[in-house]
Structure formats: structure tokens, C-alpha cells
Amino acid sequence: MWKAKIQVTLKKSVLDPQGVAVEKALKTLNYSNVGDVRVGKYLEVSVDGKDREEVEGQIRDMCDRLLTNPVIEDYTFEVTEV
Amino acid sequence: MWKAKIQVTLKKSVLDPQGVAVEKALKTLNYSNVGDVRVGKYLEVSVDGKDREEVEGQIRDMCDRLLTNPVIEDYTFEVTEV
Image 1 (cartoon, rainbow over the protein chains, first blue to last red):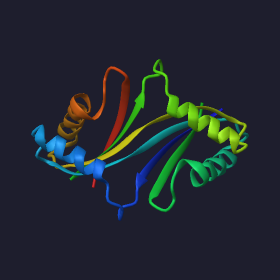
Image 2 (image 1 turned 90 degrees about the vertical axis):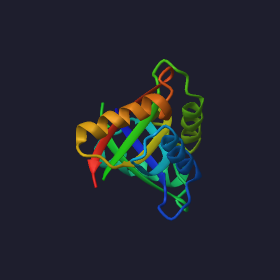
Image 3 (image 1 turned 135 degrees about the vertical axis):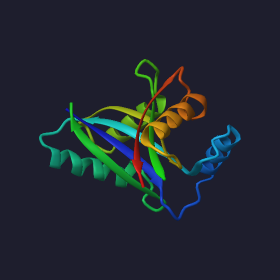
């Protein structure tokens, strides 16, 4: 059994209003040293698989087909055996 | 300048309907080897600060006060110098 931890973020060129809202909220709470904030999605997916290469390939496939919107989002992931 | 990458997940005991929906969608796409799926939030926060201890303390403070709901959510983060 493997567990994939996937981070999905908006591409740098895409405006992130939720991130801007969080940044303003943090500044309102007197965290004046806060810079840019970006908000994205985080997914943990458990999968059965023989080896790391197979699992990584499948996770990449899932991200491209369902979990992310490749037009506006980037993703990174790490796979660990559990 | 430091960058904190924060992963926020629902606690294990809290039902995650979005994760269940993603799991079903993946199975519909013939990924029959998929197990549990959990969906959470991912944040990247840039902060100014003197040293790692100061920045980590401040990020923990932000998470507890604004970024997460400690009743139903857990969080982990890593801080890197950029």
C-alpha cells in the first residue's frame, strides 16, 4: 500500500483572490511581515501497487485527468510506502 | 525571506465527504486500486523573519488563530529559506 501526498496550486500567472484575502486577514491580525499568500488544495490518496514507478505514473495520470485543472493549476506529489 | 508550506487536513475522526466523492470518481475512471482519499487545504505563506525558530513559532500561531479550525483540522508545515 502506498500513500501519495499531492499539493495543487494555482499557476503563478493566475490571480488567487483567496490568497489575497488570507494575506489581508493576517495583516489585520498584526502579522505585518507577511508577504505573498497562495491557497491551494491538498490530497492524500492511498493506492495499491507493485512498485514506486507504477504508483507514481498512476498518480500523475489521476492528477492530469481528474484531480487538477492543468490549464490553471500546477501540482507536486510525493509517494511513500505505508 | 522564508516560505512556509502548510498542509491542512481534516482530523481522522471527521467525515470527509469531498474525499469520498473523489474516491468514487477515481473508481468510476477505473482506478480500482484506490483506497482512502482525504482532501484538505494547502497554503504557501511568505514571511520576513530573523531565524527559523521565530518564523516557525509565528506560522504555528497563524495556523491556530486563523488558517485552520483546531476543532476539526490538523496541520503540518515546513519552513524553507528563499
